[in-house]
Image 1 (cartoon, one colour):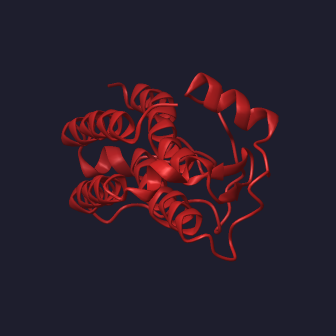
Image 2 (image 1 turned 135 degrees about the vertical axis):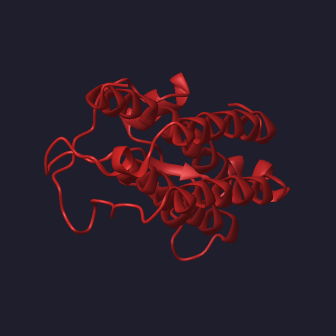
Length: 180
């Protein structure tokens, strides 16, 4: 497994690409959808920001606190979880979840909202990386991921970078639909 600093450096580079992409898009392009089942590029950005804030970073905190959200130390990853972490990336397969109010992100209000959200995640990743307990948490309490199984705080941290990188495939596909 990569060190916390390696993951953080990789994540910062990943976010730099998202920010650069954002600078080349106007609001119309960010909001455009092929159909009701597809997300817009803006919704994809909102998904990345919200999943990091409200799932991944929160689960790091739970793992470090060893609170009621954690599972037994010997809980394991699913087969998919083991494969993802061994490869240090998600398989290049499109994950399609039916549109729903619970899962489908809202459209962004502005480019600034997206830029600020990305910066907020970078700031939170930096402060999380500086928590010395994170390195020690590699064998500590775990929190369940719905598809990947039991992950410790270090794995949740790495998952954020892997998740952002995985969505480059979606970004490229959505940009092609814009003719860019």
